[in-house]
Amino acid sequence: MTSAAPRPVPVPLAIVGGGAAGLFAAAVAADRRLGCLVLERKARPGAKMLMTANGRCNFTKDIPPERMLADVGEPVASFARKALLECPPAHVAAGFRALGVRAKRMADGRLFPASEKAADIVHAFGDMLRDKEVPVATNCAVTGIHPKPGGGFLVATKGFALDAENVLVCTGGVSFPKTGSVGDGQDFARALGHRVEPYRAGLVGFEMRVPRVARYEEASARVRVGGSVVCEYRGEVEFARWGVSGAAVYNCQRWTARHLKPGEPFEVDLAFGGERMTLRSPVARPVKEAIVTVGGVSLADVDPATMESRKVPGLYFAGEVLDIDGPTGGYNLTLAFATARLAVTSLFAKRRGR
Image (cartoon, rainbow, N blue to C red; front, side):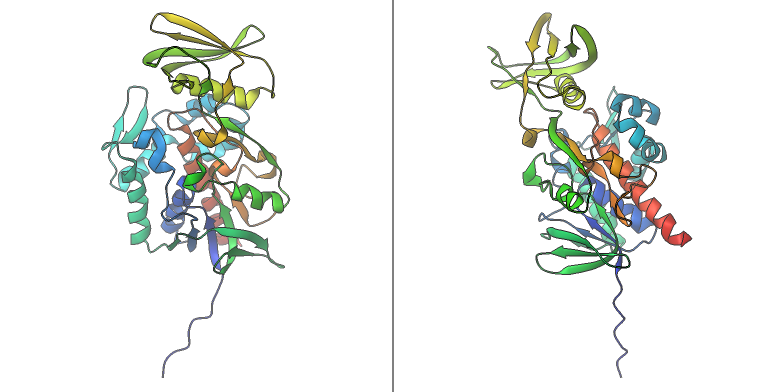
C-alpha cells in the first residue's frame, strides 16, 4: 500500500527574477534552509551579469561600506545603509571566495573574477543552487502577484499559479530589456499601490558631434550647475561617432539624472590628453542603453530595515527594481546583493519569531 502524497503547502518564498539580486537572495535562503523558488522570465538566469564590465563582471569594490555609501550619495545611501553595513563589499568578496571564485583586484579596489569572465560568477550561483537543490524555473515570466485574503500570495505565470507565503521582487530596472529587465516588477508594485519614480538613464554616455574617435584612460569629467562644480570624477573618457562615454562621463551623467530636474541647464567639463572641452546641457543616451536605471519603486514605500513593502505585508523588493543606483565600478551589484540579503534575512527572522 502506497503512502499518501504529502499535502501541498505554499512555498515560503517566491523570488521573482533570476538576476543578481534574485540569485543572491536564493543563495542566502539556501544557507538558511528557507524554502524558495526562483522564477526567471529568460532562458537562463544572470543574463545582465554576463554583460557587466564588458563580460568581466566587476562584482564589488574593495572599500569600506561607509566609503561606498558616501560614493553612492543621497537619497540612496540613507536607504541602503543597513543593507550595506550588514553585507559590505568584504562580505560579498568572501562569499564568492567560498564558492570557489578567485578575485582579481584592480588598483582602485574594483574586484573581478581572476579569469575576468562574468560566467564564473553566474556559474558559481548555479552550482551552489544545484547543490542546495534550490529550484529555478526559467522561461517563466510572472504575469501577476495577487495578495490572498488572510495572507500569502498567488503568483501567476502563463503556465501555472504558485501559492507563496512571501514574495521577493528582483526584476531589475528597464535597461537592456533583452536581458529580461522590462519593468514588470515595477508594474506589479504599481498595481499593488506603490509609487514608482520615473525612469531615467543612469551610467550612460552623452550624445554629441565630435570630430574624433579616441579613448583616454587618464581623464576627468565634472558637472557645473550655475557656474559651480557639483561633482567631479576621474577615469576613462571615450569618444565615439555618436558622442562621449567612459567611466568618468558615466558617473557625471548619473549625477545629473539623479539630482537635476528635466530641462535644468548644466555643463560637463572634460579634460583628456592635455585638452579640455565643455559640453552644454548634453543629451543622455536612451535608458534602454544605460548600465543602470535611475527610478523605480519609491523608497518611501519600502522599509529600509527589512526591504519589506510598507503597503503589502509579505512583499519584499531588492536590487534595481527599487529606486536605487550607484556609480560605476561594482557599486550597483553590491547594492543588489546587499538589499537581497537583507530581505531574506529579515524574512527568515520574522518567520522564526512568529
